[in-house]
Image 1 (tube, protein in one colour):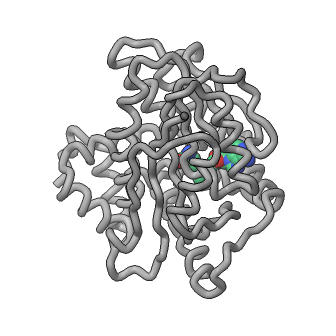
Image 2: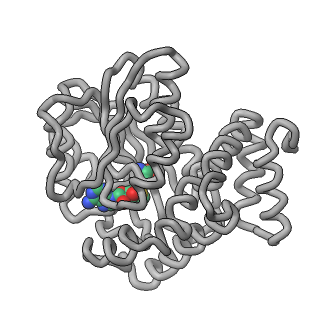
Length: 306
Ligand SMILES: C[S@@+](CC[C@H](N)C(=O)[O-])C[C@H]1O[C@@H](n2cnc3c(N)ncnc32)[C@H](O)[C@@H]1O
């Protein structure tokens, strides 16, 4: 089913998972191949190539990342609370911890984009609804860039259309900074991107209305004051700029501290910061795995700065 001449990394990855008797990732990969064919396999190949530059095995990273999430979701089912409440605890145990960030988190999260159906659908939403809006823009910013894939896609699009865009990113973790810098440097000149360490809970030091698009994917559930963070983001965007937001609900993880429980709650927060909803979708684990007990739903949207 995979053309191993064309997609050698994908074939090896699937073989290795099969040899480990994996029953979680392989069925999802098979479903995506059936539905999206070579478009999907080409994306899987790209993600595996990007991840192959790290010292961690991709199979270990995706299995460890998935196991950590499933464990937290079992706990959530029992307690109905997120395991972590304080940001400083998460900072010490996750973002500032090389065993977690470099051990499995950054590679694992990158790989989920092609290995989990929910994340692949979210990525397709990004490619169809947000990425085209970055065309013709001069500069934009992502908060919490993690592995750096979203910025990579934006730079790749501008390179393909021979435009010159500049992207900025701020992340709290020195390990995200190291990982995303290496990922972007693989394909792009350092003149095209500026990544820095920063805490969106305290500041976002860019001039007012200096950016033409913004991204906050999988960040609001990680911080204590998402309303302030959104206001900081709104301040540095020009009116009419698109903002890409991804926020899971009822989804425990080793670094989630704010549990959003409804789409209305998230929308209200973003709208109060000076945005209007443009396009939105909700993806749930149950939609892809009806037998699952996992209550995770993820709100994905493009807002517009007003
Ligand atoms: C789940 S990852 C999201 C990565 C990527 N944006 C994505 O959607 O796949 C969350 C990222 O937000 C960063 N982060 C968490 N709290 C932050 C804060 N207060 N300020 C800036 N970045 C933060 C973490 O270091 C991590 O890289």
